[in-house]
Structures are given as C-alpha cells and as structure tokens.
Length: 449
Image (cartoon, rainbow, N blue to C red; front, side, top):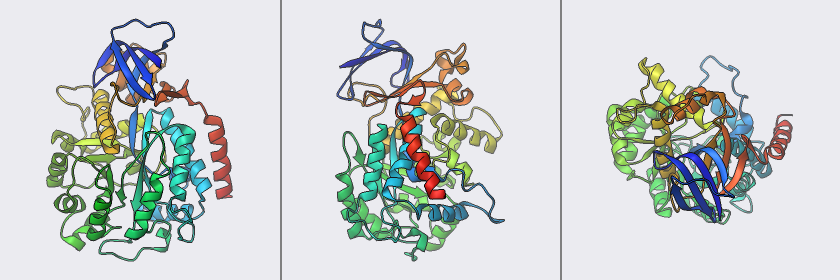
C-alpha cells in the first residue's frame, strides 16, 4: 500500500485540507482528511480526480495540422472527411499503436486518466478482415498499456454511407461490418482488454446504421456504455428529417430508449425541445469543443442544456490538439461568443466557471465511460496534481484555483498524474514521453514521405 498526501484535494466536488489517500491494487483504499503528512508519504500541494476523455479517434492525431489548407470554396466537415479517409488508407496496426500512444501520452500529461476510444478502423487497407478480427483493437489496447491510460473501448458498428441504408463510399471500406461480423469483432475485442479496461458499443451514427441494426446492437450489448455521433452537422440533420421526418436526437429519444448509459457525441444542432428532452433522459452529451471548432461544426447550446439539468463530458475527438483544460475553456468561450456575455456556464450556487465546468466534466465523463467518478474509497486511483509554483497560480485560493488552471495557465500547470496508483506523469511529462514520441515521429514521417 502506498500513500499520497495533499495540502488540498478535490473530494466529491469540494476542497478538503490535509488529505491522505491510501492506495492498494490500483484503487483508493482509505481517505483521511485533516491529517498531517506521515513519513513515507508522497507529498503534493493540490490533488484532483483525473478526467475521462469521452471521445477519441486515436489514429487521427497523426494527421493533425494536415487539413488546414483551404482546398475548395466550401471547405467543411465533409471535405475534411475525405482527407481523413486518404490518411487512414495507409495505416497498419503498428502505425495505429504508435500514433495512438502519442495521443494517449498527451492526454495523461493534460489531466485525462481514462479514454473512450471510438474505434472504427477495423479492417486492412483493402477492406478485408484481418485473420484476427480485433487486430486493430489490439493496437489500441497496446497503446493503452504502453502509456498506462485507462481504456474504455467502444467498437464502432458502421454499415452504410447515409440514411436509408445508402451504399457506403470506397473511403469507408475499412470500417464496414454486418451484424454477424460485428458480433465476432466484439467477442475478439474483449479478449484484448486487461486490468480495469471496459467495453461498450458504438453505433457510428444514424447515417451508418439502420433501425433494425441499432436494435440488434443494443441486444448484443445489453449493459455498458452506448456511444453514437448525433446532430454534428446541419446536413446530417436535414438528411435525417428527409429520411424519417424527425431530427437525429429527436429520433433517438423517440425510438432507441436513450438513458443514463448513452453518450450522444456532439449533439451540436438541437432545437429547444431536444435540449429539454436530452437533459431529462439522463444521457451524457459528449462535447469536443476544440474539434467542433476546427471542423466548423457549430456551437452546442450549453447554456440552455445545463439550465435544463443536462449532463456532459468532454472529449478530444480528432486529437487536433490534446488538452483537457483547453477543451473546457473552449466550451465556455463558445458560449460567450454565441451569447455575447460572460461567465455563462456557472450557477448561483457555483459562481466560479472553472469549478463548475470541472465538476460537470468529472461526473459526466465517468458516467459516459461506465466508471465511478472522483476520489473516494473503491475508486480507481486516478489522480492529477497541480504545481502551485506555476505563475498562473500566484495568489490562488480554493475558489479561483480551477479558474486559473482552465483559463489562465499554459503548459506546466500539471506536475504529476497517477493512473491506477502508478505515476505516469512527473514534472509535467509522461515518464515514457521520449520513446513514445520517437516511435510516433518515425511512423508519421514514413507515412507522409
């Protein structure tokens, strides 16, 4: 058993002083509050629960910065997607492992301790299944093991190119499965998991699955997380209305039994009725503000959604830039730009924006990935320490500490990260940062040569 001692730690949405966390077998075995540090304690200033990254496509880290050139007058998500398809055509399982490990190391360095990998790159470049149908899932598991990040694997079912079972495009050939093939993929993927890794299921979107297939997937995975892209794009909403007479989130709420185990990724384009109904469903909105801004998706109606009692988690999606604090900052700033006002994602009983955002992200992220949230007995020892010597924290008190991290710090605000009780980040850097980065650089250089 090991012990971490903090001058202050965030326990169940509140700061406590002089906290000792006793850790055994990767979990918190005992929490003591108001105690002095003991001999042998690993001593730190500020302790926070690690955040869950609810939505990642790890391999896309390798194409970060490659799609910022204007290629046509109407550049948008759909033209970006064609660039992504060309990039992934080259990837081997070894490439996916190297690129994803770099993304995961960066996640840990910025305070994410578990990732929901929305994993849809299943087949070889010709679209044929590997001899092991979970070969690519194994590459994701390898990246998790190499970095130490917690993993919630979300194998993606993808069968069609658009609503009404439209034929897929050639660029989608590496994603595709029928229900029987996907059942084999799920079974094989489970065998790749170890430790406290868990697994859910991810119908890609209503564009990519039929109602009958969605029903079969839910039967196939009756427990655990369910993640789906929904209402990310205006065109997607219009196509869904043309197909069904309903908007995507409206259709899911009416037909799919959306509840607390669901995470609707993006949900950018909601009408007011959908805002209220999604909030009432108990599901989590999986928000990825940096990617949503990069792709020009739009702005999630967070002010109205939180006022209605909604829950959210944050994700890094395309991994164009991996940083937990910047995701939360971008979420608040998007609302300020949309409403031309300030301090919008706070409440009367929680007036500090950073504290409120962090609390929502801890709770919603854990729910979305099917794990417990916070720092309590029985929880995974997923812990982040802040460096109070960082200039952003000069004169900080408990009330403003998280505001200063989220809105005023650059790099270096995090000095340590423990995942399942094992220290993975020290002095702001992943303990295996150099070999992971070397493998990543070699991989990407070869892919782009």
